[in-house]
Each structure stands twice: as structure tokens, then as C-alpha cells.
Image 1: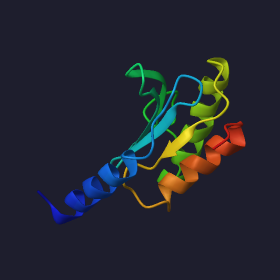
Image 2: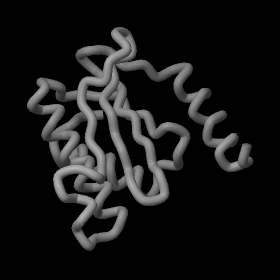
Image 3: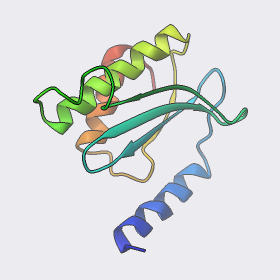
Length: 117
């Protein structure tokens, strides 16, 4: 396995030892690929995904904007969906990625949308 991926997975395991989501305060998990960004609100007690959003839906992918701007829009979109599902607070799980760039932009977009974490 690639050293970079291995390092991220070690960080992910270390963080996931302490972070867990519930139905009232789900875990907001971020996955970042080279082109897209995905986010899920997960209830770890029941093992269910409550809300999800990605840069591939609602025409975000077709817009000619940077990946950081797309991440902010995805954050805003997941906040809207969470509000509709009755979720106001979440636990942020950066999934081993640095809190920088697209991950930070997504978190800021979710905060601007009204989520608290």
C-alpha cells in the first residue's frame, strides 16, 4: 500500500477510537477523492447513514468552479439536508485528512448552513 494512504488510515483509526456518532449527534464523515468530495452523517449505534451529499449531485459537478468552492457547496447542501432531517449538531470526522483546503471548506460551508460542531 502507498505510504501516504497508509499514514492516513493510521490517523483515521486513531481518531475513530474516540469519535462516535449517535442518532441525536451523528458523525459527519468526509471522503475526498482526487475529483470529488463526499460527506455522510452516520449514526454509529444503529450503523445507518442518516444523510449524505456529494459534489456529484444537484448540478454541482457541472459548474465551472474550483474544488474548494465545490466543497463549500457540498457542506451547505449537507447542512440543508440535515436540517430537514431534524439534525442540528454533529461530530466532525475528517477521516484522516488534514483540516485544510477542501476539508476545511466543507466544514465552513456546513457551519454557514447552520450545523453546529
